[in-house]
Length: 187
Image 1 (spheres, helix red, strand yellow):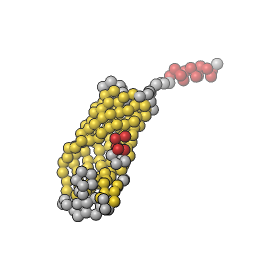
Image 2 (cartoon, helix red, strand yellow):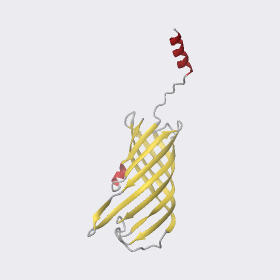
Image 3 (cartoon, one colour):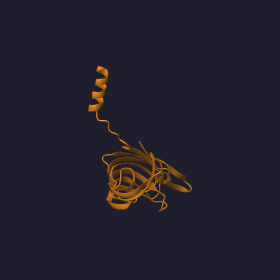
């Protein structure tokens, strides 16, 4: 009898929260289409309408040959941000802000033989929509605009070029940010 009363008292004074859908992980398919960039993001619900996000991106690949020219969009990036969900967390529309730092080496893409490498630091404003496929799976669509400051060096070819810009050139930028087509798993 004492055991039963003890169990009842413990149950009565213990707070059993039903924490549904508090953590999500995602992978951005649009990043994979960007020359094989690997990406991941962890989101944690801070309240019914706010989530905190941390993400990484990594692309070590270089494509092509010396004869045909190289194409690369190599990067290492880390970001930390917050999202506001007007309806419910991990469901429907969202608006977000995040800070990010990126070390990059990009060349051979648009201006065939120009390569730029450097570090960019800034903030991004984004919006999107999260569509529920299943109670644990979402597909997310979104876009953002990124602005900040960068320190860079430009070369005349992706592999072994002559320096075109002054060493440690720097400047402000505003560019299209992340394009999001993510698969999301919710815990």
